[in-house]
Image 1 (cartoon, one colour):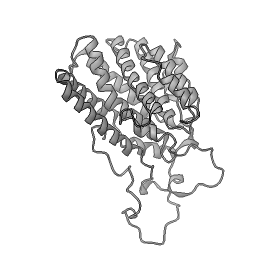
Image 2: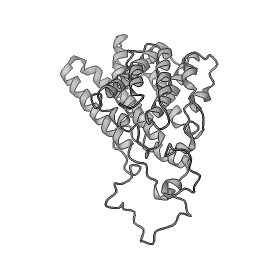
Image 3: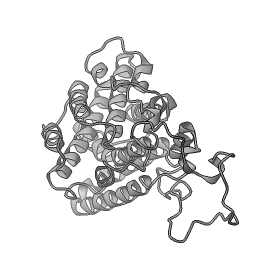
Image 4: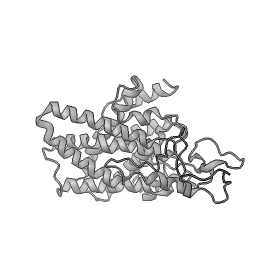
Length: 324
């Protein structure tokens, strides 16, 4: 267990959260123990920014049933905290869908946004359908398309995607302020939640301090914005949210067959975990994005990867519902 993992365990294992304020407080406590060298921080800060945006939307009465949205988000958050608790207690004992992110916390050859998307993959494709069934069960209402709950759910998806895809959030330098804002600030500016978890430019793709020496290699020849666009090109929050609702419909129908429901959840967990691992492969620049002044090899150019190197994950699009 890492030096601060015992503290993270104490925070994550405090039990269920029931309000946005409790959720924001838990995320803020985790954030205080994480730094830019820990891949988990990028998902945690994205989650904080989403929480802030949901609070703001609720205050502006943009949901038909704000309490339903809050309960849904808290139930989903509980699964994140439970997965982190299991991993910190006994690595590998928790849900498979979260293990890729947890195991790659010290991986420095992935972009910060790749860590975030790996967590979002587990959060949306696995935890959200389970949380949706739980929340619908509390109000004794099936997840029905076209119902007010479905409209609120789609609004949640729009908020999630807006926070993830705003380039300012990843290309600007700034502290994590969204957590404090979500806990009680009444005059939250919408842009603050986007900028609050910003990754310094020198943190893309590596989180080491900026090296004053001239950049080398393909990664150095690609701008941070181009890296960001490539990483986002393999992920679609809209499709992931659509798939998560469909999964919730299936799981709602399976409530009458507990054994099949159990097997379905196990299979879903493994599949989402497999997707998570593909999202965290070492980032490689696409040849068309390299700088034109980059020296070329004297060997004939080939589009095929070297036999000893796997193909770029950017070129190998995952064939799952969360892919464009």
